[in-house]
Every structure is written in structure tokens, then in C-alpha cells.
Image 1 (cartoon, rainbow, N blue to C red):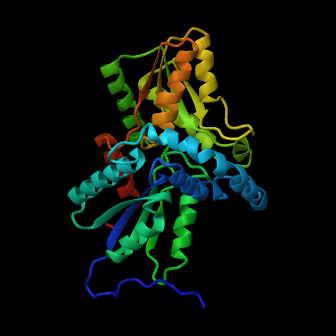
Image 2: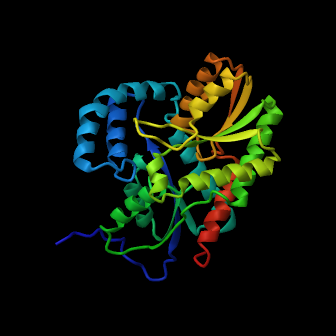
Image 3: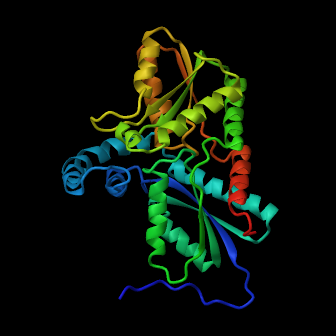
Length: 341
């Protein structure tokens, strides 16, 4: 017989709290090879992330990747790690704190906000159990992925569902699928670009770099590619950019198969060789800065651009805990919680 986790004893007259669980991808506990190995083992074993038959993938993952990659990836994390810890975890905590404050101002005492990582700590099951123990009986899951993908958003749902399979008393549940074209999100992105230009000047072209996925995910029906391009188009329109002043590309490819094109690194190399001197780069698929933005774009791809003849690559930070971003997330969550509060 399965054993189900019980909820705290119900007390008559106690108002039910509403919870908002802000979820992001994850981070290792430390910039060390052993910590990165544990993180990659969890992340890369998810069948939503790598759609390869399990027996074959187990051999590749444990026989090669987890033996060779952790040291290299740990070095990358060392370049962005600071005394506060992993940037993604620090920023996620700041986002949750700011969102909690926003709900306290609009619905005092009615909403509890927490953040969790799909891989690593704090885990989704741990955050959900803590919310249940605090009296949350209505739960909104908000994956911090503007564009939907089976490898990110759907994987978050999997983790939530697996945890709830062990609960006896289930909360009411709602789930935010995407927000790639929401006016508040586009407006916050546009404001961040304008502020960056005002402070640091404007370069020759704006590159919008999104995390890539294998091309076969698109051909199998994943809408991620289309949603990324729509975000890019809407941001360009909000900034009043004409054709030739902006471009969308995809980064972070891994392995030998074809991923979504054009590739960010190839694009930057060709631009530099072709005489383009300056480029601004924004990553509108990342709600918080992380390894892929701070190391891959701001360090690695910047150096690639300079090495091939470019003179300046300026990275525009993710929205992170900007007030307009938090205001949008508050509005988005409140809209999805209609009738609960």
C-alpha cells in the first residue's frame, strides 16, 4: 500500500493561504567538480531535457559526460560565483522576496511566495511541503520561463505532479504555462534596453539570444522556437527597431546534433569578421542571470567577438528583480489567481 503524506491538522475557521511557487532551472551547491557532477546527473537524466532512449543515454551520461564535463563546468561557475553564492539562487531569492512584498501590499497576509529549483536546491518538493505546512491550500506554480518548452516548463509540471502523487490532501492547483508575449513582460524588456543604452551608449546592432534546444524538438511539436521569435519581434517593435538593427539567435547547444539556428556564437563570429564593431546582447528567455548569461554571453561570447575583429560586446542584464519585472510578475500571478484572493 502506498504511504501518503498528510497535511497539518485542519482547524475550523482558519483561512486558507494561497501560495505562489516561483520556479527556475537550478544551480549546483558550489563551483566544484563534485557539486557540478551531482547537479548535472539530476539535470541531464531528466527525459524532458534529453530525449534519448534511457539505456543508451545512461551509458553516455555516466560513461563519458559525468566523467569529463564537471571540472570544465565548475571552472565556468567559478568565474561568476561570489560571496553570496550562485547568482541564479541569489536573484531567485530576491525575486521571491520582492514578490512577497508586492502581495503583502495588495493582499495582506493572504499569499505566501516561495522559490524553488527544478534541479538542485531548494527543491520543488521541499518548497511545496513547507508551503503546505504553512497552511497553503491553493497553489499557483509560476515557472520563470517566458517561452514554453517541454524541456523546461513541462519538466516543472512533472516535478510538481510527482510530489503531489504522495500527498493525501491535495491543494487547488493552477499553473502558468508561458508569458512570452505579455505586454508587461515586453515593456520591462524594452525599458531595460533603453536604460542600458542611456547609461552605456548604443552599439551597432541588438542581438537577442535565446537558449537553444535540438531542432527535432521543434519538428516534434514543441512551440518554443515560435514563442522566442514572437518575443524578439515584439521587443523590436517596442524599441522601434527596423530590419537590420536587431537579430535573434540561439545559444548553449550541446552535442553533435543540429539545434535551433542561427547559432549565437557563429553569428557573432561572422559579424566580427564582416566588420561589425559593436553589438548589444540581451537574453529575453532568461528571467534571471545565470551561467548561460553571465559566463557564456558576457565572458565567453564577448571574447569570441573580440578575437575575430569586433571591438565591443555589451551584455544587457536579465530582468532579475527590477521593479517593473516584479510588478509584472505580481500582475501575472494575481490574474491567474482570480477568484482565490
